[in-house]
Amino acid sequence: MRRYVFPVLMGIVGVAILMSLGFWQLRRMEEKRVYLDEIEARISNAPIPLPAVPDEGRDKFQAVVAEGTFTGEYLEVLAGQKGASPGVMVIEAFALPDGRRIMVQRGFVEEEARSVPRPPHEAKVEGNLHWPDDTSSSTPPPDEKTGLWFARDVPAMAAKLKTEPTLIVASAPTGDGIAPMPVDTSGIPNDHWGYAIQWFLLAATWAGMTLFLLWRIRGRKI
Image 1 (cartoon, rainbow, N blue to C red):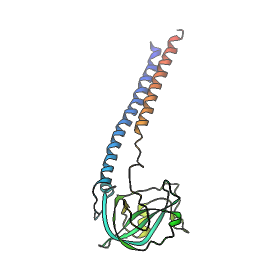
Image 2: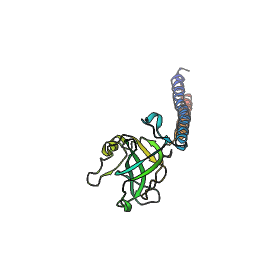
Image 3: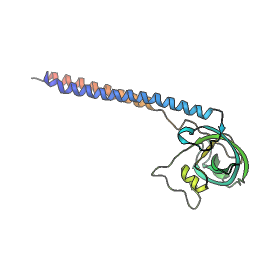
Image 4: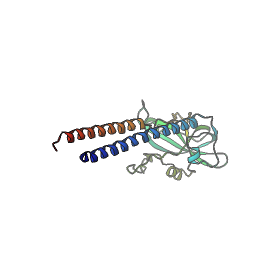
């Protein structure tokens, strides 16, 4: 019997660890579902006036409304839209009546329309507060010749446009033929069910290998 002790112990420990990882993924799946529901609620709620001091932890994805003036100072971020030719995402400085300057992600413009003039004008913007950071270690810096950015970085964009680091992603058209790119939860996957299945399958495989090993040990001559 002594020869069975170590394989049985390893089998039990291995299955227990793999099963616990599977159940942890199920808990994470439920936590992510609750988180996504909260985001959807913030996105779809009736817009509130822009907070005086927006806070990322409290206000991310909050629907807001603001009135002011597009200043004509903007950045263009390389972007694409399904069913459209390559283009850019327009992020423009927006001056509020109280003197504050924030940023508005107005939306998408195809490459051939980039040269169309976009003069300053007053507007009412409805959208969602967002603090995206699309940069990574492999993201190149903005192109000095064309001014084209390759990812959104709120603090860096705010410094360039001389605004506060507050970004509203417009959910409705803001004029000049710019197509809005509203925020949604499509970019926040909830893949934990698939991960849980993988861990449970590994646990089953480990258990099967343990049983096979015990069968081999039993067949050996003493």
